[in-house]
Image (cartoon, rainbow, N blue to C red; front, side, top):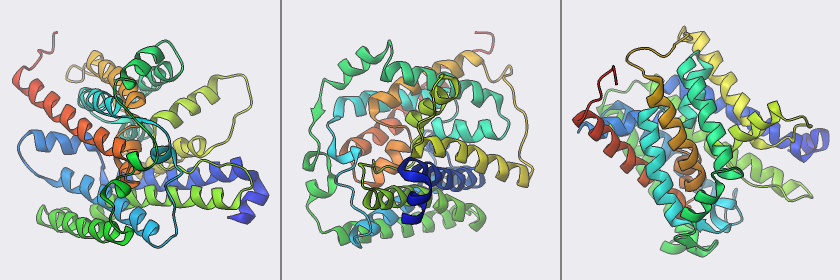
Length: 352
């Protein structure tokens, strides 16, 4: 890592790390069909199926690898933004529900939309662009006052108050052991659901990419003489940074996120082409654009309010034991399940 920093500098090393992690995540997500929305739909329909098994393997893999790294002193997360900075419980709750609702309407979360768009899905491409624009508006634009107001309803200070490992007060080894046990249970559940090994392995790779993201950025931060943010896979913020870098008349500021987004696109596209799954898909009568756009708006605002998307909060923040991240992902589940059930109970005609 020191040689990479000497060659490319801190920012360049972070961008390369993001690119490597992105390629791994994109390939694994495409191969496993990892999707939080699909898992929530199964639960909403009253069944525990293979999509849930894939999500559980990814989540528990990230949790086990990250907490195992912490227990072995390979990783320190107390100084990360997910733990150290002030958070918002109201933002996690409200934003999480909004994101979960939008995820069902748009048939995919931020990461899934990027993967699908890289495989030729034009619906996902348009939806992802709208999501990114709304996220930027919620972060620094016209929607930022509304986001700040909702986030300010119930704040939580950074540090021990936001660190679940400190809240529960158990030795770090215990968390690693419990996470590994959870991973074994997730694998057993996947086997019972007849999920093929060729799907389970890349599902674990999704969680592995999250852990590698934490480890690589931590290694760069430990080696660098500058302050380097330790982070991992998330999509809403990096997507806005990437879009702004493409349209702004200024030099691109390299970062982990700038490398991550194109890396995911490359990994997903290459995997889809290799497997023969790359195909142009458009909006149609059974895929009304207005529903996708409404979902994009809810996800863009919700992700910025919640402090992350389904992967940024759900896997990266969750694996770091961030209190607000766990609240956000539970809220995403609740919002998605409720929305899917409501849509089944009150179907909207294709004409409307």
